[in-house]
Amino acid sequence: MSTRLGTGEGTQTRELLHFVTQETRFALLNNVLQHPEGMPSMYELEQLNPSVSDATVYKHVQKLIEAGLLEEVTLPDDRRRQGYPWKFYRLTEEGRAFLEEHNLLAAEETLERLYESITDRPEKMVKYENAPRPDVDDA
Image (cartoon, rainbow, N blue to C red; front, top):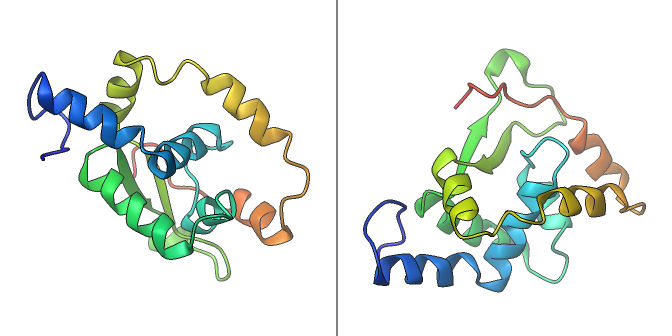
């Protein structure tokens, strides 16, 4: 099965919808959507999914990248700070369009409010949330 966006119609679209809505992958996409910057680090994704191993989170993020839904964005060397993340993950334009087309973004504002309501975030996670992020044009 090819899960890469834009690779076909019909059966491939259904397969991609099934791929996207798998529980862990869908949770990760929701985590990206609800993040205050729309660009969480791997650590933040791991913290938001405590019932899933770090290795599983990483594996599913890589699958979402391979499918063209997420992209890894790195902070330029001159903006990196010791003790802060420098790799982040965001929806691709194609990923956002696919999710919109299939009405999977309807709750984006609600997700953002839910994220804001999490009051017991670890200190390190709050630190990472406030880390410098790449500019929108950085890739």
